[in-house]
Length: 102
Image (cartoon, rainbow, N blue to C red; front, side, top):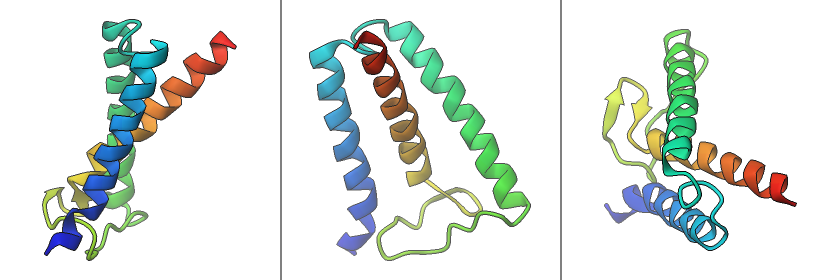
């Protein structure tokens, strides 16, 4: 079913837009690749642990949806969650560095 790819597609499209903004204004990866990778990696790790704990305690429930893939990295942890967390961390980093420059 093509609908299962919608969410992942929109996440990848959004990340692509952020990459274009980043390359134009040299805010994160095009400014300091090592620092951006470290920052996003650490914050993603914190959110992954947060998600796993939330799932373990029954707080988060990523039930099946027509718009997500059935691929789960862990029970109740969909593949798309990694892309979402990257998007969340990346947009925050771009907003922070961009506002700092203003």
